[in-house]
Length: 156
Image 1 (cartoon, rainbow, N blue to C red):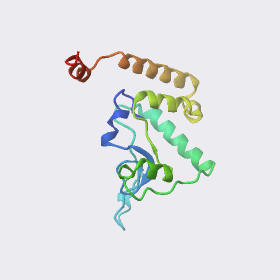
Image 2 (image 1 turned 90 degrees about the horizontal axis):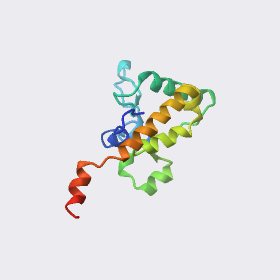
Image 3 (image 1 turned 135 degrees about the horizontal axis):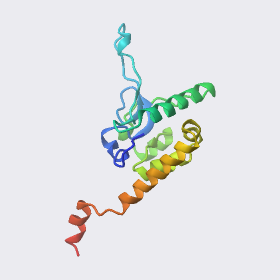
Image 4 (image 1 turned 135 degrees about the vertical axis):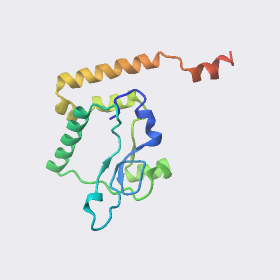
């Protein structure tokens, strides 16, 4: 849900996998343990929204996704009882745990496949958003970074 180009790449500090758990900080959704008798400590954390996101668009999609899941009685996947990042790729696959997008291009491709996002945002906003993000990623790809210069220029 990150709006900025680098947001999907910042997953090293946030969620990395499409799963949920109580203690797994690499999970997309976390339901931390709460203090018995202190109901104000109970919460659900959706951990992919960053501070640059358009809150109106993000929460519209989150709410619509939640409502669709309830209305159509989507099954809740099993809880990730281990930290997903500690599992091998084979173990994650066996558990049905998918990685989140690694970059803006991957995130845009996922969004292009989502009828729910198109329905929620409306075709005009959906098309504009995708066009804008494709252009942003294309401009990013044309840049030569300082890391690339330092690493490759001295070889030449």
